[in-house]
Length: 561
Ligand SMILES: Cc1cc2nc3c(=O)[nH]c(=O)nc-3n(C[C@H](O)[C@H](O)[C@H](O)COP(=O)(O)OP(=O)(O)OC[C@H]3O[C@@H](n4cnc5c(N)ncnc54)[C@H](O)[C@@H]3O)c2cc1C
Figure 1 (cartoon, rainbow, N blue to C red):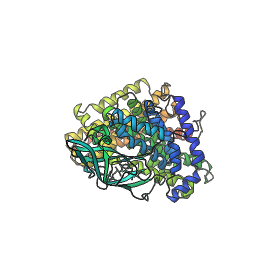
Figure 2 (figure 1 turned 135 degrees about the vertical axis):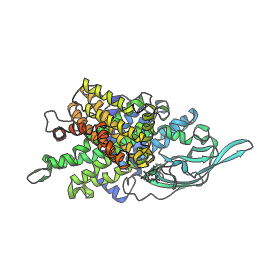
Figure 3 (figure 1 turned 90 degrees about the vertical axis):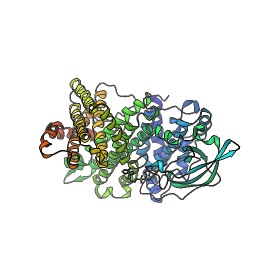
Figure 4 (figure 1 turned 60 degrees about the vertical axis):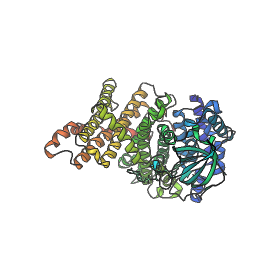
């Protein structure tokens, strides 16, 4: 188990390592040369140097036995440094996941101990040229090699596409189809018949090595089947999505904040029309404040989900939908925040030197890998649709009532507004059910987005309440105090409520799900007027958040998380 003290010292060591080895000028140069800093990545993984992967390796295999919450904090920090380097570390974590979750005790002891002791770099080989979002379409095969009746090994053939660490890994977990279905195999670098292509020339994360793999009759012994049972590959991959998607969510958070933390100080020094940009409401309330609110809504959801996984609720993929919500919200928010940060720096933002354009190129990948945003929307929507049906439409009304109770107990956190958005969501979903609107795939996916906003609004209100009671997780990010979190919660709840009602109405009406004569009743059911009325106070809250961000209030925010 990792104590808060150990987590803090790991975060500190990571920051110091980055300061020494990856200063801005070096990052810009590596990005321009499209170069993966292999020696630095090896030093990050070497147990006698930074040994960052030790944090997620269980103690029994020589690691520190960190939990989900610890790794979320580390992932955010890694992403703040450089998302390419973060991806290299994450790929080792991802590549070893099928082993963590599917291997026999003997296999774990062998492979995970080596990962801890030797700082081995892993790659995760699932995607293929024709099998991306739809992994079931994979074509790589593993042909059994028999000795009489006994399977003694396999010959793996096929192509893998976009594999992070593809050209630098020591070990590869490869998904290939056996006669009993997709199965994970552990393949060592240099195996006969195994090769990798030159690194891809990418839009961003240019410090990460991404390469295609080719396997031409690569022989592996039968004991290299993860778990020693064929056909478990897709189940093993599914089991960890709650966890792995949370880590990519943390990347979105880190990337978004890395960009904003450049835009915010820049705007205090840049004088236009006689005053710093930071004093111009039209600037801060468009380019900074809403992005901070969305990122912190994503954080609230990440932290809640991390706590639930650490409490054992995530077993067998039970929190995969929560992982998808966190990933969707935090990576889309991170991407938008980085885009706004370029704008916030004007012409300077458009140049390499100021870094925000690199961060923007980098953070975009978080909305694509480990499941695209559209696949997240589909995952979220399908699961919550089942809950809507099972509870006869009451699921989100119940969540709304919980928010109303929170508001009664603790007013001022925006929980009443979050309640309105959850009630509206329940009504929109019910209309979709009655009119069979989810036969339109677009409606199904748009619901996914609305669900993510409504759930994250609730989560941020709960986080603000815990902060007010001094009950945040001791490992939580403490960037904002309780009062600032309450203002952020109100800002985001208003946005979520407006989005759920107006977009919900748009798509229901757009699919001809509500007639002219029913429109007034539907608008009342989703609380359109009430949601317009609770926008009152929005500007004052945004002013306050801006004052907090620019240290213009009596109690300043901490300089770093
Ligand atoms: C830099 C980088 C690193 C990567 N690292 C790894 C790695 O280490 N290991 C690994 O296995 N993979 C890796 N990937 C692969 C990554 O996970 C896939 O790119 C991703 O899952 C999307 O698959 P795809 O590229 O085939 O796109 P597609 O699945 O073809 O999707 C293209 C577009 O269509 C949308 N779409 C897809 N299906 C549907 C649908 N049913 N309905 C509506 N819209 C849909 C998608 O959202 C997307 O916008 C990496 C990719 C990149 C770019």
